[in-house]
Length: 78
Length: 440
Image (cartoon, rainbow over all chains, first blue to last red; front, top):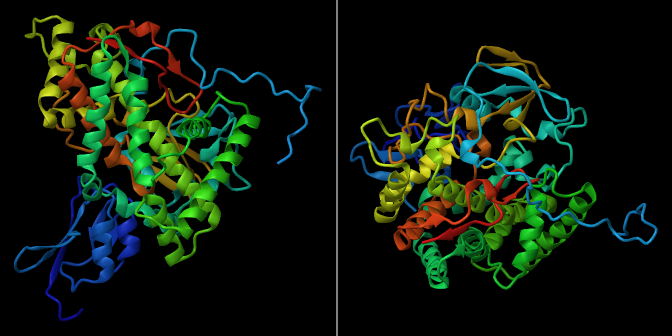
């Protein structure tokens, strides 16, 4: 998905409960910080099925994946 | 299974206690229990005598529950010290509750999608319908009424039964097994063993049946997900299935019953040791406690957003149980680690006291509780980390809609039994009213 639009991942630090599901599902894009909260690993990403799944699977919906240009929500949308 | 020989030559089993046992001495309602003050980690002992590091600060509890080196499965390792006096169904090593890391994640993934906030929000219309129907029947039965049997117990049972398509099954039996699942002292080890076997057989039959004839229900979808990805044992699939039944039968009922005791307790303001009370909303308020109570109750009935805010505050401030079995959520260190300025060695047991952490003055302003104020920082009632409660959003929704519709239909609702005469379900990990007489 290298020619997919650039995406920006954000994690709501107040909502994040540190389940670690996202970091295990999409380790290229999300990691668990020492404070027990998830953080994006890079400023922008091409996206992947794993990243979409991580955003959809988050138990508290703390993750959003948006189009870097338009700001449109890419995941979770189901 | 053949029965174990008993000391009774007739083979009759000893008389079953009136279980879950009804307490004979008055117990304080859960909202009046004294809780530990948030402070540095301290060393204490479990009822088994095993030393335990108790964490009480919000930051420490949260860090511990999300810490990769603090696990659940190691609590059941051969070298683990004893942490429970009488193991119950929740001590099953196959349980999602007692697995860690990738194995835990494989189990959780099979059901997680069904329990995200947006997934749960899609169930709102029919949960709302169930609540209205039960409240309608309660109102029609006339004052006085018994609200546990009429509402707080059947609501979560109906919701989980519909999600799992358990309708038509023996709900009494499911409730009976669920009680054993959470037993601390209510049942003997032998009774618990029988319930574990029967519940396990029921769960496995359900799994086999839904695998053969899948439907749209939660059991079918979790079996399909598990079979597609592989890696889950049949024991784990069965344990997850009965775990959902247990969760659907117990904790929301407990929370709802205790919330009603809290909201309808006419003497809340006079209970010592509980400064965080909505009745203590400043010296300028000159109305009596009863009038102010009615104000909060009516507001929950008039405004759904107020009911949602109150639900969060109640979940934060009213604990689910007495915590006599353990001073918090147990974990075991799999490596040396540091929390709250203390080094916890590998192999040590840690208890994360979420009740104390939920009152940590560093996070939640001390003083009078505003029942309708947003929380700011999420409470730790549903935990944190990988084992954060799967059903958190469903429980919130049931409680919010339950309180709202009951208060809307019956704005003058009051307890018909004095608080010190309430009969409690005891001997379980949770404590809630066995019966709660109300009038209007």
